[in-house]
Amino acid sequence: MPLILLVEDNEMNRDMLSRRLLKRGFELQIAVNGQEGVDMALSGSPDLILLDMSLPIIDGWEAARQIKADPKGKAIPIIALTAHAMAGDREKAMAAGCDDYDTKPVDLARLLEKISALIGG
Image 1: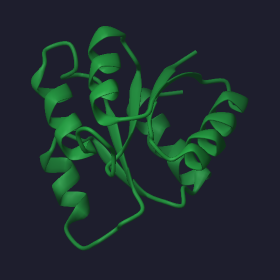
Image 2: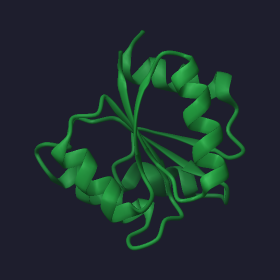
Image 3: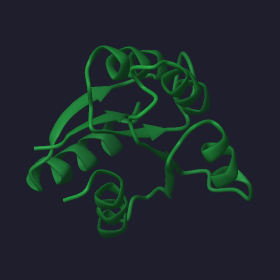
């Protein structure tokens, strides 16, 4: 089963998304801040990262840059998740190293399509 690293500081978002992903057969690791997300991404080997952009300690933009700058993280697909969808956010996420972008509240069918496109299955 694909392993997804969910980096999300909001407990309600984390709970809702993790339950729905587990129900669809994904394995899950959870980080609650940007630094923990970077550390877990580089020490483990998730198949994909769902990365909230509004995080404590270091934000998602910086977390994505750090993960992609490391040889261990370079190939891990990252989907940026943000509730503050503003003009230019998608471009900013891609510039930080994210492979795709989605808005909150999460549309699960759309998110699953994006996950599938990045890791297959």
